[in-house]
Image 1 (cartoon, rainbow, N blue to C red):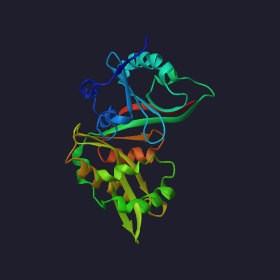
Image 2: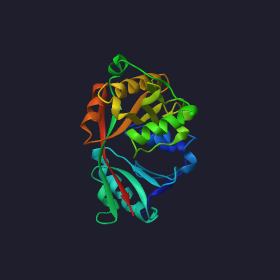
Image 3: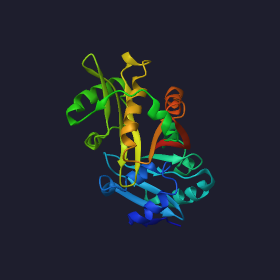
Image 4: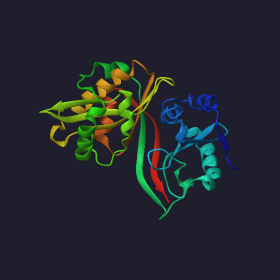
Length: 254
């Protein structure tokens, strides 16, 4: 059975807001900023999003562990409708539906974390100032050294939700967002990086704390993705009050 194509934002919002932290990316993609590049499908209460922005197709399919069976049915029905090559983020236990073997390149198990203890992040020592389009060259230079394989959409600088810290005249730490939606009261942190020469000084932690404090003026939920094997990053976010709310596999198919 093929999944149902959905075009009604209010219908999608009702489904996704059952678990806003788990579905943070999808909720943000309901905004006008992302909506034109989205295609949505559902089976029962499970939702899959195919995002075509930023020059590639990305499938997002998240579900609670107890509902993975429904998600598997959704993905199985969706397979004939997917592009020949796409990137995918899929809840643990459903990733194999997209295939295994030479045509699938795994990128590891990841965690979805969400801010559970605001007091902890607000108590952390903040540092940094908001970044603008004028800071784009310096930001790209930092990512080139500190985070060369990151996914960065420069349009997100226009949200005003990027924070950076300079040292000796250069940008040495930054934190930003992949999603910021005051309408759906959700944000997803991303593009957090510290220059190798300043690592160990807590600057990454400081800019994340500053950004979270800014975001809490406009959102109720802050989430992020982190590779499960990156124990240093997981520890940093845990110390700031984030808890794991989901586990998913990242892979390239085709």
